[in-house]
Image (cartoon, rainbow, N blue to C red; front, side, top):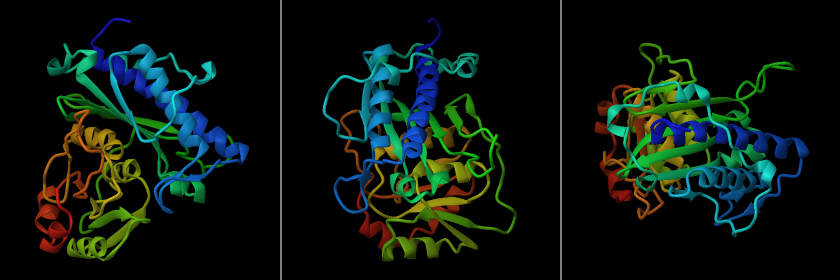
Length: 306
């Protein structure tokens, strides 16, 4: 297939994410989630995490063997069922013109960050609208493109409704697959973690003087709340979030003019050698980012070192 590499990788990632979403739904339908505990009681892995990552990483590596692909799950090497490999592309993406700065990017210059199932805890608890599949693409250490697939989008709409959607974006091009909106005037809605709260998190959220607080799972889900006008800022003053959580959401948010950083205002780096943990938390907003950055308490910054 011809055309700029970045668009081809992104178009492949879009279709691969859709295939992973099918696997995530099929595991839930089967009823055996295959849950194991990884590092602690809040860090779960399911059969859906494992199958989705195998599908994503194998599918991308077969098409683009020189990519660096970093997935969340530490899985042993092994053969992947041929039925799990996705060879297609999202034609919608291929129809766009690539921004000039990415026209000549080479495979070996890209790093792909994969969270096969963002919001695993929520997945096991039936909070399905929190669940996303994330594939982020980085170039020169910067998140430039990404895919957020919501496997269970519209799942409560009833029989016959189409379930699932793919939101994607590329810097210099924009983001697609969602309905943009703004938080109503006079509202300041903060979205934050539902499973990693502590006094530092609470103090930081309170410092933003919210009118409402949405405690939900998943970095991908929180950024979708921002771009769809359901939340004003994403405030996560804690450890726990990693590069595969933020790469795709950051690229999409930045593609529509928003901003995502750590609690000190530092940009994230996505080089293949970078540490995986976002140890200084996450702060993001579609608009008025500077307002929220100015209100981060000194105690929060002291507690979260870059």
